[in-house]
Amino acid sequence: MKKHGVWHDKNAKPNFGFYEAKVDVSGDGVILDEKTGVYWNYKKAGVSKAEAKSKGYLGVEGAKKAYVAQNIEGTPRKAYPPNTSFIKSGLLDFYSDNFASKGFPAFPTYTPIPEHQKMGKDDLHLTTYKVAVHTHSRTAHCKWLSEIKHDNPAWINAKTAAARGIKDGDTIKVSNELGEITTTAHVTEGIIPGIIAISHHLGRQHSGIYGSGKRSPTPGGAAADPDAKNMWWNKHGTHPNSIIPNSSDPISGGQRWMDTVVRVAKV
Image (tube, rainbow, N blue to C red; front, side, top):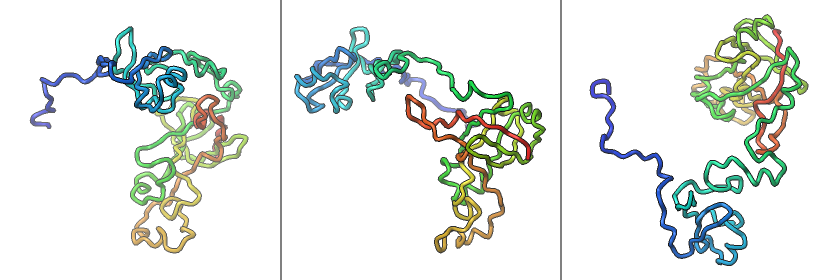
């Protein structure tokens, strides 16, 4: 590549905009759903025309597999098929009938996080992050991966650390109303002030000799691995889960991993 450069076909046509392709909607069983603007094949969905008309595209269970096209300004185009009832048209919708029906803002809206509105001057915002080596906290027992990444110090901005008398490598306590954890500070400009970040890959209480430094309760296991004698590291990280509240987002239902409020002090 250094000698010849990167090759590309100068005659190749760009592939973007494929969703604008016009679609023939004259096929047998294809109808237009007026509410969503979707052309779909009720026969392929396995329902009668009468049922298709009465229930509509979003009301028939198999309709999404029978998507044909989207009516865009009077022209049937390939577009993007709606994949759930939350997406009305397959376009970039800015108003959600589904959200409105459930009492949520129908337009994209910023909603302040309640805990963040009550933060004191010494409180910090705890967030978690992922590294390329591990998969969640499920791979700490893998000797090759844990040899590469076996510790997860808390990232903290230099300004935030200085205000608390914390230096790089210091042992710190991260706490809130749920409890506390002890870890090592990694003072860096790679994170903004007011935040502390701890990856959630490491620090499992039981993950074999490679992942937790503890022998497996079952016979054999990693401790019987011939490579165990070559393990040179003795750190296994600290997991932040114990101080992250079990709290879900009111709309998506997903866990609120990034909203935790904590206090940090040098030990």
